[in-house]
Amino acid sequence: MGGVVLDFLVNVGLPVSLAIIMLSLGVELEVADFKRVARRGLPFVIGALSQVILLPLTAFVIVSVAGLPPEISVGIMLLALCPGGVTSNILSKLAQGDVALSVSLTAIISLLSLFTVPILAAWSVVHFMGENAPEVSVTELAIAMFLLTTLPVALGVTLRRFFRGAAMAIERPLSVLATILFVLIVLAALAGNWQLFVDNLASMGPALIALNLVLLLIGLGLAHLAGLTWPEAKTISIETGIQNSTLGITLAGLITGVTEGFSTLALPSAVYGITMYAVALPFLWWFRSRP
Image 1: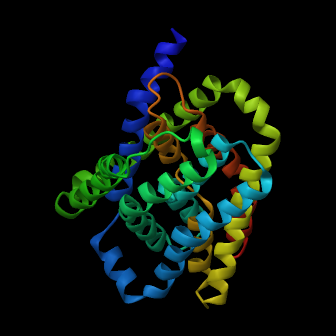
Image 2: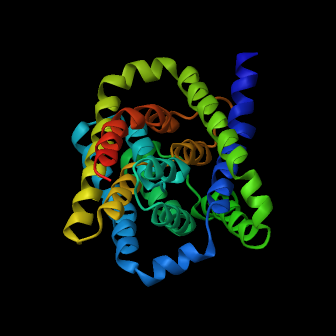
């Protein structure tokens, strides 16, 4: 019975949850947010540079130094390729950051991930797993990314643009539903891979925490060097340091083709879905203490 429930969460709950998360992101986005980013482009450029280039580079260095098992290393790389997701937007709001910048960054990077993630994910699998690497179709991965991330965001933006009242009415229920589904999926992922989780926690846990911590500091430092405002700097830090772990779990399943239970590649994203809050909370307290 437990296996049936787990398989249902993997094959139905996971993609539905991700689509709802991305739809709720699009619903929050105003067309004016894109215009605002265009008018003041530097914060967006800094945020995009941090997420698309510095984030995966940092993850590569950390997993290489940590000497983790190949599948765990790939799992961390997949996580590093994922954009921020709705969680980063919520944390930016709580930190009294630039929420419009946060939502715009997450949405646009999510749209760009259609092109960046499949190629980099395929490379990561081959690099770390070598002869044991599963065959990865960049085209199929790109199509899946479009259906699960790009399309829901675009639908959300369209809904907000032409049916504003309806969009605002469903915005909060969508976020709550997505959060509940996310928690269920993380718990199921850990339960289904419990022994693997225990065996690798000593090495995987510190690596994930280090990645999270370093990225938060890199985003903050880069924003400071660029002379951005404090609200913008807080947002860049959070957008760089917080990833969409639901997308990481989904990517792992798409790459390995696992239909029963969770892929081993998904474990880092599931664990990160818990550890990121422990790392982010002190930063959140600090950011709120300096409005």
